[in-house]
Image (cartoon, rainbow, N blue to C red):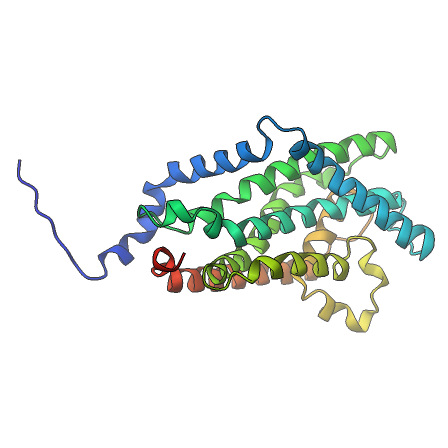
Length: 273
Protein backbone atom coordinates (compact mmCIF):
# COMPACT_ATOMS: atom_id res chain seq x y z
CA UNK A 1 0.00 0.00 0.00
CA UNK A 2 1.42 3.37 -1.03
CA UNK A 3 1.12 6.49 1.09
CA UNK A 4 1.08 10.06 -0.10
CA UNK A 5 2.62 12.79 2.05
CA UNK A 6 0.95 16.16 1.63
CA UNK A 7 2.63 19.29 2.96
CA UNK A 8 0.14 22.11 3.08
CA UNK A 9 0.70 25.55 4.61
CA UNK A 10 -1.51 26.18 7.61
CA UNK A 11 -2.70 22.59 7.86
CA UNK A 12 -1.25 22.17 11.35
CA UNK A 13 -3.08 25.28 12.52
CA UNK A 14 -6.41 23.92 11.29
CA UNK A 15 -5.79 20.55 12.93
CA UNK A 16 -4.74 22.03 16.27
CA UNK A 17 -8.02 21.64 18.12
CA UNK A 18 -8.55 18.16 16.68
CA UNK A 19 -5.07 17.31 17.94
CA UNK A 20 -6.18 18.26 21.43
CA UNK A 21 -8.62 15.37 21.34
CA UNK A 22 -6.08 13.04 19.73
CA UNK A 23 -3.56 13.81 22.49
CA UNK A 24 -6.09 13.54 25.33
CA UNK A 25 -4.18 10.58 26.79
CA UNK A 26 -1.10 12.81 27.12
CA UNK A 27 -3.21 15.25 29.13
CA UNK A 28 -4.17 12.53 31.61
CA UNK A 29 -0.60 11.21 31.76
CA UNK A 30 0.82 14.65 32.55
CA UNK A 31 -1.90 15.29 35.11
CA UNK A 32 -1.24 11.98 36.84
CA UNK A 33 2.51 12.58 36.74
CA UNK A 34 2.20 16.01 38.39
CA UNK A 35 -0.05 14.63 41.12
CA UNK A 36 2.25 11.64 41.68
CA UNK A 37 5.34 13.84 41.92
CA UNK A 38 3.55 16.06 44.44
CA UNK A 39 2.33 13.28 46.73
CA UNK A 40 4.05 9.96 45.99
CA UNK A 41 6.35 8.75 48.77
CA UNK A 42 6.15 12.04 50.59
CA UNK A 43 4.58 13.28 53.77
CA UNK A 44 5.39 16.97 53.31
CA UNK A 45 3.18 17.31 50.20
CA UNK A 46 0.07 16.06 51.99
CA UNK A 47 0.88 17.90 55.20
CA UNK A 48 1.44 21.13 53.29
CA UNK A 49 -1.96 20.79 51.61
CA UNK A 50 -3.46 20.60 55.12
CA UNK A 51 -1.24 23.03 57.04
CA UNK A 52 -1.23 25.88 54.52
CA UNK A 53 -4.97 26.66 54.68
CA UNK A 54 -5.10 25.91 58.41
CA UNK A 55 -2.25 28.28 59.28
CA UNK A 56 -3.62 30.99 56.99
CA UNK A 57 -7.07 30.56 58.54
CA UNK A 58 -5.64 30.82 62.05
CA UNK A 59 -3.66 33.96 61.19
CA UNK A 60 -6.60 35.68 59.50
CA UNK A 61 -8.99 34.73 62.30
CA UNK A 62 -6.67 36.24 64.91
CA UNK A 63 -5.89 39.40 62.94
CA UNK A 64 -9.31 40.21 61.50
CA UNK A 65 -11.61 38.77 64.17
CA UNK A 66 -9.74 39.11 67.46
CA UNK A 67 -7.64 42.21 66.77
CA UNK A 68 -9.55 44.18 64.11
CA UNK A 69 -12.92 43.00 65.51
CA UNK A 70 -14.44 42.56 62.05
CA UNK A 71 -17.85 40.83 62.01
CA UNK A 72 -18.50 37.35 60.69
CA UNK A 73 -21.21 36.60 58.16
CA UNK A 74 -24.41 35.35 59.76
CA UNK A 75 -24.13 32.77 62.52
CA UNK A 76 -21.12 30.90 61.13
CA UNK A 77 -17.96 30.92 63.27
CA UNK A 78 -15.31 33.27 61.92
CA UNK A 79 -12.88 30.37 61.38
CA UNK A 80 -15.39 28.59 59.14
CA UNK A 81 -16.05 31.78 57.19
CA UNK A 82 -12.34 32.18 56.52
CA UNK A 83 -11.71 28.53 55.70
CA UNK A 84 -14.63 28.42 53.26
CA UNK A 85 -12.94 31.30 51.42
CA UNK A 86 -9.52 29.64 51.58
CA UNK A 87 -10.75 26.71 49.48
CA UNK A 88 -11.33 28.58 46.19
CA UNK A 89 -8.39 30.91 46.84
CA UNK A 90 -5.99 28.02 47.38
CA UNK A 91 -7.29 26.39 44.19
CA UNK A 92 -6.78 29.62 42.26
CA UNK A 93 -3.30 30.34 43.64
CA UNK A 94 -2.03 26.78 43.13
CA UNK A 95 -3.47 26.62 39.61
CA UNK A 96 -2.06 30.02 38.63
CA UNK A 97 1.42 29.22 39.91
CA UNK A 98 1.41 25.78 38.32
CA UNK A 99 0.26 26.92 34.89
CA UNK A 100 2.64 29.91 34.87
CA UNK A 101 5.69 27.69 35.40
CA UNK A 102 4.48 24.65 33.47
CA UNK A 103 6.25 25.26 30.15
CA UNK A 104 9.62 25.99 31.74
CA UNK A 105 9.28 22.94 33.97
CA UNK A 106 8.54 20.73 30.95
CA UNK A 107 11.13 22.29 28.65
CA UNK A 108 12.69 18.94 27.68
CA UNK A 109 9.34 17.59 26.54
CA UNK A 110 8.42 20.72 24.61
CA UNK A 111 11.73 20.94 22.73
CA UNK A 112 11.67 17.33 21.51
CA UNK A 113 8.24 16.32 20.22
CA UNK A 114 5.15 17.93 18.73
CA UNK A 115 1.86 18.09 20.58
CA UNK A 116 -0.54 20.94 21.36
CA UNK A 117 1.44 22.83 23.99
CA UNK A 118 -1.69 24.09 25.71
CA UNK A 119 -2.03 20.60 27.18
CA UNK A 120 0.92 21.29 29.50
CA UNK A 121 -0.52 24.23 31.49
CA UNK A 122 -3.99 22.67 31.47
CA UNK A 123 -2.64 19.44 32.97
CA UNK A 124 -1.18 21.27 35.99
CA UNK A 125 -4.70 21.96 37.25
CA UNK A 126 -4.75 18.39 38.57
CA UNK A 127 -2.51 19.21 41.54
CA UNK A 128 -4.69 22.20 42.44
CA UNK A 129 -7.83 20.05 42.33
CA UNK A 130 -6.28 17.36 44.56
CA UNK A 131 -5.18 20.02 47.08
CA UNK A 132 -8.70 21.39 46.96
CA UNK A 133 -10.21 17.95 47.63
CA UNK A 134 -7.96 17.47 50.69
CA UNK A 135 -8.88 20.89 52.04
CA UNK A 136 -12.57 20.28 51.38
CA UNK A 137 -12.41 17.08 53.44
CA UNK A 138 -10.75 19.13 56.18
CA UNK A 139 -13.59 21.65 55.96
CA UNK A 140 -16.04 18.80 56.50
CA UNK A 141 -14.18 17.89 59.69
CA UNK A 142 -14.29 21.49 60.89
CA UNK A 143 -18.03 21.71 60.26
CA UNK A 144 -18.51 18.58 62.34
CA UNK A 145 -16.36 20.12 65.09
CA UNK A 146 -18.45 23.29 65.13
CA UNK A 147 -21.67 21.26 64.64
CA UNK A 148 -22.55 23.38 61.61
CA UNK A 149 -24.79 21.70 59.06
CA UNK A 150 -24.19 22.55 55.38
CA UNK A 151 -27.12 24.06 53.46
CA UNK A 152 -28.97 22.37 50.61
CA UNK A 153 -27.03 24.37 47.99
CA UNK A 154 -23.76 22.64 48.94
CA UNK A 155 -23.73 20.94 45.52
CA UNK A 156 -23.15 24.37 43.96
CA UNK A 157 -19.53 23.86 45.06
CA UNK A 158 -18.97 21.76 41.91
CA UNK A 159 -19.62 24.50 39.30
CA UNK A 160 -17.95 27.07 41.58
CA UNK A 161 -14.82 24.91 41.67
CA UNK A 162 -14.83 24.80 37.87
CA UNK A 163 -15.24 28.59 37.78
CA UNK A 164 -12.27 29.07 40.13
CA UNK A 165 -10.13 26.88 37.87
CA UNK A 166 -11.20 28.83 34.78
CA UNK A 167 -10.42 32.15 36.48
CA UNK A 168 -6.87 30.87 37.03
CA UNK A 169 -6.41 29.19 33.64
CA UNK A 170 -6.79 32.30 31.47
CA UNK A 171 -4.14 34.43 33.23
CA UNK A 172 -2.07 31.27 33.69
CA UNK A 173 -1.86 30.75 29.93
CA UNK A 174 -0.67 34.32 29.44
CA UNK A 175 1.91 34.06 32.22
CA UNK A 176 3.17 30.67 31.00
CA UNK A 177 3.77 32.10 27.52
CA UNK A 178 5.53 35.17 28.91
CA UNK A 179 7.58 33.05 31.29
CA UNK A 180 9.23 31.26 28.38
CA UNK A 181 10.86 34.50 27.20
CA UNK A 182 10.97 36.49 30.42
CA UNK A 183 11.95 34.26 33.34
CA UNK A 184 11.36 37.14 35.77
CA UNK A 185 7.72 36.10 35.88
CA UNK A 186 8.71 33.24 38.19
CA UNK A 187 9.26 35.95 40.79
CA UNK A 188 6.25 38.05 39.83
CA UNK A 189 3.63 35.28 40.06
CA UNK A 190 4.08 34.59 43.82
CA UNK A 191 3.81 38.33 44.43
CA UNK A 192 0.57 38.47 42.44
CA UNK A 193 -1.01 35.65 44.42
CA UNK A 194 0.19 37.05 47.75
CA UNK A 195 -1.11 40.53 46.93
CA UNK A 196 -4.39 39.11 45.66
CA UNK A 197 -4.90 37.20 48.89
CA UNK A 198 -5.16 40.45 50.84
CA UNK A 199 -7.40 42.32 48.39
CA UNK A 200 -9.82 39.39 48.10
CA UNK A 201 -12.44 38.69 50.81
CA UNK A 202 -10.60 35.72 52.31
CA UNK A 203 -9.93 37.00 55.81
CA UNK A 204 -12.98 39.25 55.94
CA UNK A 205 -16.51 39.55 54.62
CA UNK A 206 -17.36 41.45 51.44
CA UNK A 207 -20.12 43.15 53.41
CA UNK A 208 -17.59 45.50 55.02
CA UNK A 209 -16.80 47.05 51.63
CA UNK A 210 -18.75 50.34 51.25
CA UNK A 211 -21.69 50.12 48.85
CA UNK A 212 -20.31 52.83 46.56
CA UNK A 213 -17.14 50.77 46.01
CA UNK A 214 -18.80 47.36 45.81
CA UNK A 215 -19.09 47.10 42.00
CA UNK A 216 -15.48 48.15 41.52
CA UNK A 217 -14.39 45.68 44.20
CA UNK A 218 -16.32 42.88 42.49
CA UNK A 219 -14.28 43.43 39.33
CA UNK A 220 -11.78 41.21 41.09
CA UNK A 221 -13.09 37.90 39.66
CA UNK A 222 -12.22 35.97 42.82
CA UNK A 223 -14.67 38.06 44.86
CA UNK A 224 -17.67 36.41 43.21
CA UNK A 225 -16.11 32.95 43.47
CA UNK A 226 -15.30 33.36 47.18
CA UNK A 227 -18.69 34.84 48.05
CA UNK A 228 -20.30 32.05 46.04
CA UNK A 229 -18.41 29.43 48.05
CA UNK A 230 -19.51 30.99 51.31
CA UNK A 231 -23.09 31.02 50.09
CA UNK A 232 -22.85 27.35 49.04
CA UNK A 233 -20.96 26.04 52.09
CA UNK A 234 -22.31 28.21 54.91
CA UNK A 235 -25.68 29.27 53.51
CA UNK A 236 -25.83 32.40 55.67
CA UNK A 237 -25.38 35.00 52.93
CA UNK A 238 -27.43 36.11 49.97
CA UNK A 239 -26.65 34.61 46.58
CA UNK A 240 -23.97 36.91 45.03
CA UNK A 241 -25.59 37.11 41.61
CA UNK A 242 -23.86 40.26 40.36
CA UNK A 243 -20.43 39.28 41.66
CA UNK A 244 -20.68 35.79 40.16
CA UNK A 245 -21.79 37.23 36.82
CA UNK A 246 -18.73 39.49 36.79
CA UNK A 247 -16.51 36.54 37.73
CA UNK A 248 -17.93 34.43 34.91
CA UNK A 249 -17.49 37.21 32.35
CA UNK A 250 -13.91 37.84 33.51
CA UNK A 251 -13.13 34.11 33.39
CA UNK A 252 -14.38 33.81 29.79
CA UNK A 253 -12.66 37.01 28.62
CA UNK A 254 -9.31 36.10 30.19
CA UNK A 255 -9.57 32.51 28.94
CA UNK A 256 -10.14 33.66 25.34
CA UNK A 257 -7.36 36.23 25.68
CA UNK A 258 -5.07 33.64 27.24
CA UNK A 259 -5.69 31.17 24.42
CA UNK A 260 -5.04 33.88 21.83
CA UNK A 261 -1.75 34.97 23.43
CA UNK A 262 -0.66 31.38 23.98
CA UNK A 263 -1.42 30.32 20.41
CA UNK A 264 0.30 33.40 19.01
CA UNK A 265 3.55 32.65 20.82
CA UNK A 266 3.37 28.85 20.87
CA UNK A 267 5.31 28.29 17.66
CA UNK A 268 8.40 29.90 19.20
CA UNK A 269 8.44 27.92 22.46
CA UNK A 270 10.73 25.12 21.26
CA UNK A 271 13.31 27.60 19.92
CA UNK A 272 13.41 29.85 23.01
CA UNK A 273 12.91 27.50 25.90
